[in-house]
Length: 378
Image 1 (cartoon, rainbow, N blue to C red):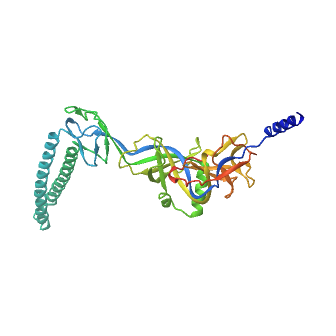
Image 2 (image 1 turned 180 degrees about the vertical axis):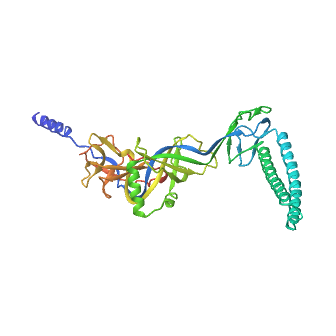
Image 3 (image 1 turned 180 degrees about the horizontal axis):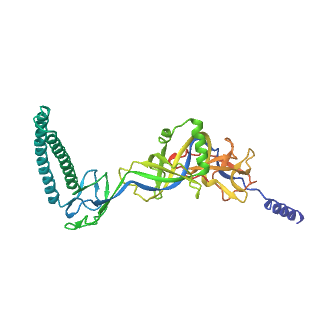
């Protein structure tokens, strides 16, 4: 009986012995080492490169409207025709006056030459010669006036055709056929806007301006070199920065109220995917930086002391490592400080793993970053 009880107690002691579970398997990877482009980021607005109001510069009734509202038109294309007959008649009248003035000039020139010859032989008085000279000069002046009258009449006739001053899109018409326009003051007919190419305006902070100026000076770049720097633009609804252009202009002074410098880029816009007034994201490449360390952005944690990532040491124990972040590239984040190239960072189990815990690391590889997806710096 005693032996049986002893054996029973021994069996109970074996069942209650605690056996620690094996360390959890957690995926780890060394930081990705990659050349990345450091960007200057900003936000801005698109602006038409040209926008103007079409007006009637002569008085008359609208005879024809030769476009449909919203049409894309070419420079020189006729859009409105104002009644032309009165101006055609005025041109013909001016041409007739020119012919008369030319005939009169020819006659007065002949009279002058004759009186000049007679006066040289003392067959005519000086007074008669003076009169012939005055008549000749008056005829020449009248002929010049007739030339001006023709130019003015031709100009008025040309104004009866209102043409597109540049390639663009024409707004809805503001007048109707048969309506009197240009009476007393210019009448607005429509508006034309050029959207290809298109401007993008954005602001650069004072700190960035100083940094860029220092870099420009160090590299010996000229103002023409700066205009070759690419600018990349994306709409809020787009992924990345699919629209590419070049820097075009920078304001000569800092805006004191905002501490920023206004900068402008110009982009081709053949498909009219960008319209004036759009709010856009902008980035401008500043420098190529080799051997930068990147980790998935999702593994970066934060607490009251700042940003951190979890790493596993040589004993497979998890440690919390403080880091300084750089700009984002797709799903990856540049680590400026805090990580070494051979550190192994946790890329899974982040919600259940804590510092000081021992794990069973499973080595993985971080995929390369998509440069087109570079986002804002923290």
